[in-house]
Image (cartoon, rainbow over all chains, first blue to last red; front, side):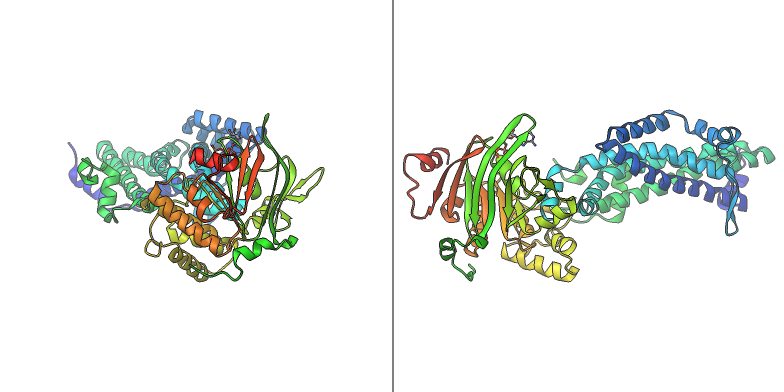
Length: 260
Length: 270
Ligand SMILES: Nc1ncnc2c1ncn2[C@@H]1O[C@H](COP(=O)(O)OP(=O)(O)OP(=O)(O)O)[C@@H](O)[C@H]1O
Ligand SMILES: [Mg+2]
């Protein structure tokens, strides 16, 4: 029997442990993603570099971290690397919050993985900027740095954000793998709960809803970012907030765009 | 029409070397094995409007792009207002400048492209003010004031907040001219500014260029558009196979309907 009372209480009345797990999942995803963007920036520069060595290094990095499962990476980083005496993650505290060794390993693993994917996404974006736009900027007397910040990056963003958004969506779910090395994120915490009270079905349906809420919230944020990046296309006037989100989530029908 | 301090005709009769804006000497350019420019000599004085014509592939665009060093050259030299844009020293072994120094030297040279190349992620006002603000260091307000004045001058006063893709080709090209003028250049380069436009839009652009010519702006225009030649040019230069094959000075007095040389070429192609 599905225990509705238990289920609703579990979902709506967050226990402290579950709330902490939620924050851990979100934090792991965001910090891992930021790390991935930074690494990805370098990887994309390497991929586009004039130097053969940089191009090869970046290509091998991408090949490796896109090819090895995240789960395997985490285990290697958390146990293997320490066992081999190369690097041991130690707990450290930021204020009252302790960043456990396993969480650090998970962040690094996710960051490395993300770096490979973001590298490809950013490279694609940079390559999408047309030569004419760059030449116009150079002809104005902009230095290479200015051309980068004023023209290339803003224009590349339009190409980068949609796949980046999808990637972060995947990332929110990939965080569940950190349960394997003992990071008390949503999945592991739910598992612990279910071992205590055996309400496996209720707890995991609740978990599914939790992930759905996270990915849906991100979808809404993503659609707003994309709408902002497409301001220049808004010839027909601004869309309302709801229209923007709706168009992003379920697409725009032919009648909406007014095409025959 | 805005009266210029010195009428164009007077300037042309002066010959002092500080009135030379562009001095190209023996310019050679290879793309790999392809020898595109084979020793171009061209000197352009202040206030001159030089139209470059010639068959496709003769190197017109390439030459124009070497003037602001969008293309490096392999031999020879190009001085703009007495300085090389791309090289710290010229001669047997030219030493290239650092990119930031090259960028600095480009401020005085405006360029207008066939495909307009307005920055599509910026409003028209931002397109025109971004140069003065980021490159010349004007305050945001000053840059915007300057941009607004120029947009009014090219007839786009009501389009300042529009994004390029909502504008017609003619409007975009006038916007691109305003963007170049916002740097207060001493020289303007145009690469086929009207060839992507239909005749009505071309006329809008030609009339902007004509005004600039009357204001005494020094310009080099690669174009087969006869109206530039008729209404703005002070000299026509014909290129073929990477060299200047013919020049027609003082074209206001010249008979363009003659049946040989540039006249014949223009009559045949236009
Ligand atoms: N970046 C490049 N790499 C290799 N070859 C080039 C490059 N740019 C131009 N060329 C070649 O150089 C030659 C001259 O080109 P250019 O564009 O200067 O001619 P053009 O006189 O402007 O012709 P058009 O009237 O068609 O514009 C052509 O053969 C062209 O294919
Ligand atoms: Mg050309």
